Length: 111
Image (spheres, rainbow, N blue to C red):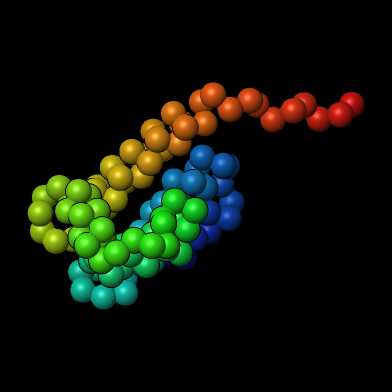
């Protein structure tokens, strides 16, 4: 399945590619230790630093990650499953939408 998903990322339209990337990224990071279908706190921390560096402050302390993990881990099993991961990305998308709503559109291309 992993090869098929990676293939989709290369061949798809923008939104299809974004969806496939969300899935593939989650799968890559949760393969590193423990439950192969959930992110432990160390995997989540690595994912945030490597995949969302602009949105992840470098000065976060371990207690900040504890709080983040607690907020994301809605079923309180000490791991982030795919549903919790997608829910958190959805909230990030909402934040981005609100943040960039007032930004002017890109200027038109010169003719």
